[in-house]
Image (cartoon, rainbow, N blue to C red; front, top):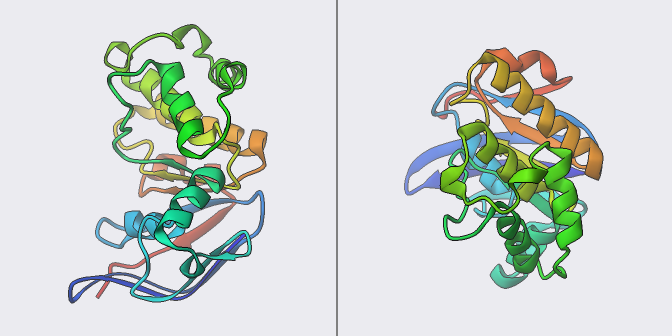
Length: 212
């Protein structure tokens, strides 16, 4: 599903992350682990094509991301990658449902209100479709963000520290929801976290060491 080879990424002269080789098959669930400063977020951004590596190659679904122009990469990402950032970045001026419809629009996909409503319902927040983000609880907002990440049925679903601000019960629930949504759309799931509470939810694990 994806393959990383000889990856290094630097911000200026500072090495942020190094991955000699890592590959995953379709439908696998991976925990991307490592201490703070090991480059977990940077690596997710490389997988999503939000950053281009300083060295090495990133291929997702057989597509070498280096072969895509910036514009083509944006369109590819919208169709093939779902991303749940640490900060959820729901647009405050749009309802929960419209945040999902915007994700469809940005991917160049036709608006599918019924499909978006169905994804919200699958996450038990169908009744919140018309609510604005600032009226949602943290857990509700995270479910909307998960729905937005999954709305275009991505091949790759990425989540960055999704349980950091959650209590024990909600942390386990969030990991379960991500896995369920990945299964529902047939996506490979990569969750970056140093949260030991969710370690057992993943059959596969890739460990990063602090960049030297």
